[in-house]
Image 1 (cartoon, helix red, strand yellow):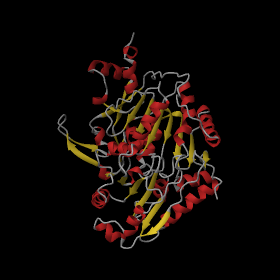
Image 2 (cartoon, helix red, strand yellow):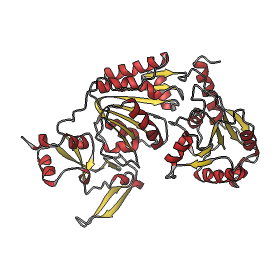
Image 3 (cartoon, one colour):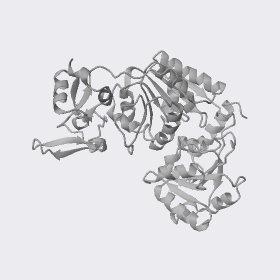
Image 4 (cartoon, one colour):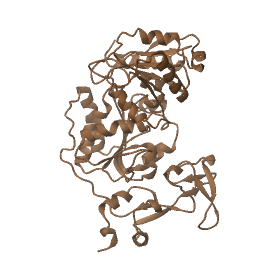
Length: 461
């Protein structure tokens, strides 16, 4: 029996559907050489010279500034390498990437994969059935355009179940690490018999051998023709819509016959135009799962706002609002534009209200996962955060505030998503959302208009 059939199926799953460096291949030298000779393992050039630029064949970087040169100890020559994806291991024009061209892995057929015992609303069912149809008939792509808190994840369950019943492989991808962390325990609970792995920068196991992968879009740089279905959650989120290499890598990870499902509550202009031109099949869900309207943000002018923030002080209007809230038992989530502000304002708040449990999280915080868990357990009363928590996270009963809502980091989509953190529980659907500002911006006006339009479309006046 030849060597390609004697390989451990788990090893094949670890290699197939990826572009890997030699050091990432779990193969001894003899097996590696044999597979090369049999054209089962095929090398591809790592960095390709185009007419006017170079292109990394793992992350598709083409920016000249993100290529560097280094002296190679093996051949005593200078070689070009990609700096964009170097955290995954250096890709250079001295080494090759390898693709598997042998038999495809066999994935389990699950008769009853979904163990979730909840029920979808009528509107959710219609959307879920449309996603099932797209997967069943191998449609190229479909967009699920659903308001914040509509239950987008649960609407995916029937489509995921259908795919798993057919022995397909799935990936749920998202631009944000925090969303991967949020989704993973929920999906493991909902699909208890299915092998599931989470891939992000800090994940311990990056073997990628599971049938259901939950991944940041950056981790898909390693994948090629791997999945029958790819579901991209928060497709409008930064950096996915700004870094063109991420959509390229995501599409490359999908098999040619596969289906791409996009999910968003705030589609970008390009997606809206495609919908209007009937170039992008879509489904629209205008109501939250608990059938209450989206909270409409209130605007509060803050005198000397920027001067206060520079001095790590709170505007008086914020302190007045915080002290006189209608539901003072609710937790509070406060968004600020910078990491430094999150840290300094938390310290200031702790000085003013030492009896209230407060904390701050941001992208550079190594303990942010633990802090978010404590906040979810209601062991923290007020949490200061940057935009890392603007989407993909659910807290049952909170009020939301943005300090300096006119800052450029808070574009229309971010403001709508942040407002969507409030009122997500059927037991408390009326969370308060306040934009503190020193002058209204177009983004603020448009965000409020978009939320009001959603409520009107959902039948709320």
